[in-house]
Length: 191
Image (cartoon, rainbow, N blue to C red; front, side, top):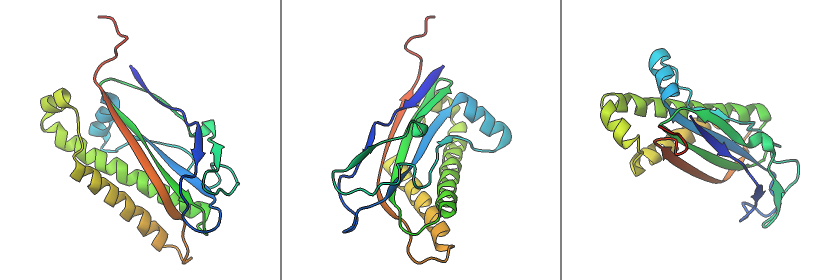
């Protein structure tokens, strides 16, 4: 067994979006593609590769931030997930500046992003299934084009949710980052 563990230390504003102080919140997406989740997907057709966390403001607190300001991140946003090996796991974080978008709309947009990521990974698993030996040997690597296609699909899904609501001013995306790792075997296992 393996474990995907992500502990957040703090959130710091590196650059400003607009002239006033921003009220930020973050979306966290844990991503796990392991043999258990792949088997469940192949059996049920339901993709469940994304680990979610609270995604609405004020998950970083109620304070507004200026450049250089920071806050400790709640442990509720950490990820500790046990998984079977071999795995591909990772995490993506998207930061938003709170404008007029309601918590319900923030959650709906986050859920649309989760669905897009799950669907995309499910498609990649199906592609890989036709060359199972190659996938086991080489893992499921995403090319730059694949990564851009996923990013575009997620952005489109989120934009569709925001457009479907009547207020004209929406929260602004103020940054994102991601990290993906592949682990083939447990280095602590004895044979």
